[in-house]
Image (cartoon, rainbow, N blue to C red; front, side):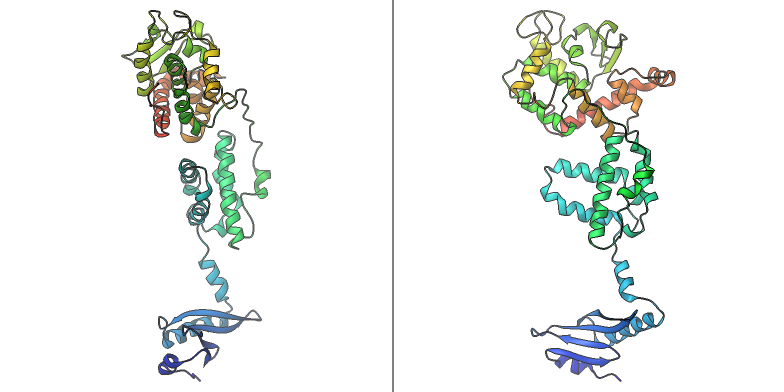
Length: 391
């Protein structure tokens, strides 16, 4: 039998008022009122909140109580169902982790890169899946295609998935982290990425160029380094570049075989930014054929030590080498673009192993490399300072 009426609910004072069959009205000392239903589920007494009065009326509370009692009578667990309904999909969990960590990340750029990598590699596969329904197979479906071909991207992607699922575990949405040790046996050994030259993370290259511009080094040296970075060229290739190798109309730099490590001619597509560097370099012309003549010995190529000293003066020598900027470019191409491996290798003038790969490069790679180098220049420009003035 029901004990409460709408009038009694309105006048109820602090404490609990019983309506019957487990339905209660709780009134605080401050006067706020809320409903709860006391049930026995799986042998345990549970109190289930039904909402606050007057938003939830007496009639509403009775209806909700009836539905919950019916669910228990059918062998269901309303609390478990409520918890399951609150379990987020992976993308929502990722957003919660992202928002929680963003204040302590080193830069907006880093935050954008983290979210961008999830949008590119993870969300298309598991973004709309509830976190408790993600299996090892789902995580492997994300990682396997890039595990050996783009190892650094794969490593960071797994780390980010694992962090998000660790958050889900902490909130008791999942019992096991499907990006953790449970998938180790299904992944092949990750290739080692060897680095023989100190190199900056690609996200710091643009700032490094700005720092170099603020040194007292010669304009020719600053321009030479910027040109080498924009073209991903070796130090010697940039320092020994001559004007007759530059085709301004075709916007390309044709390096003869006798200047190349692989002893074969190499064409380099010139981005707008690289073209601008060459225009500035004309002001440094000393009457020789050299694009970047030595600031100390007119008519002679700039020495490697000139560029090394410039990095030292900029406070970068312990973290970067001129050659290391090629590694920065290669990592950027790997992590931030969809450029095929062969195209990125060709941009560095690396020799490719088999005849099929070499035939591919002879075919259409120059146009693809032009697109890649344009993207690199645009990326540096967006990172603030890659197109700044040389002082």
